[in-house]
Amino acid sequence: MKQLLICLAAALLAAPAMAGVHSEIREGAREVRQAKVDGAREVMAERREAARDYYNADNAWERRQAIREGAREVRAAKRKAEREVRSERREARREIRREIVKSRWD
Image (cartoon, rainbow, N blue to C red; front, side, top):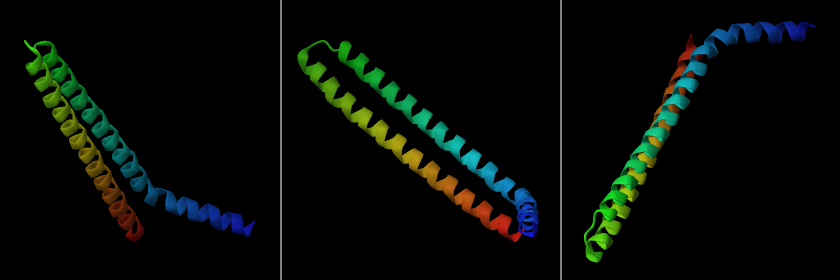
């Protein structure tokens, strides 16, 4: 019974301190999710542009060129999107750690 009361008191004292951490976790997850969506939109836009260039080509050489350039641009968009997601994750982890340290001292 005594141990239960101690655990309950510890949980009640820790709950307000952890509220900031939980909000940072939610915010970080939202930012990472948004970065993924933005990256996917960018990749799809590049794919559409590559397809448009291919179908607007006049001869075989221009079609091959459109394929090469389109593939290059799509790869670049994918790399950029992945880099953006990684940086958002890194930033979210940094913010969560900062909030944990801050909540320990409060």
